[in-house]
Length: 219
Image 1 (spheres, rainbow, N blue to C red):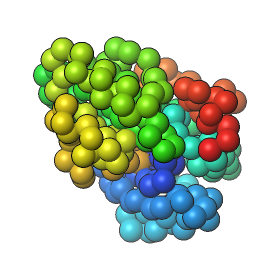
Image 2: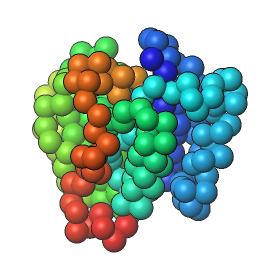
Image 3: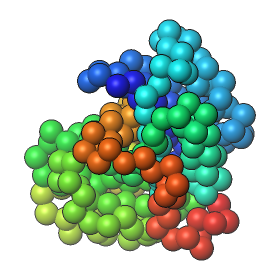
């Protein structure tokens, strides 16, 4: 199965291809100056570089966030439009799950940190690929205090951990910068796993994951 993954939760987006158990390609692009304008050219580049036609796509996986209201909506709209045009299914994948997947081999708890505005962050805890706490929004200071209370904390990962590396690394190990970048290919991989289990097309039910809808709606 050839799967397209779309991740537009934050200021850096990613598109990736996953094909029968292996990554075919992954590209990064900025969403800060208009994710809609940059997403489609990035998609054409990804497909061309990997010699894949749109008609070869069999599934679309899109990141659900939490993250930017506008960027999430645009990524989801493009994904739904492609799925409808091609007559293929689409599924949603929580953004935090993709970062936990990258370090799921570690023993201990994984804290995934995504950026919000100013000194606010989203975070959740995982053990391997299993989410053990709900997504939460907090100030950076509150997260720093929480990290000191987490037993067996292995690592903090995600673009929020990268943005606040200087503050957080006083209390936790921070993943290398390369792992803190979004990966559409990992979203595609997790989407393929999800669809193989459910065989459910989420075209009409997909909604972004908002931890604090009132705050997210004005971002």
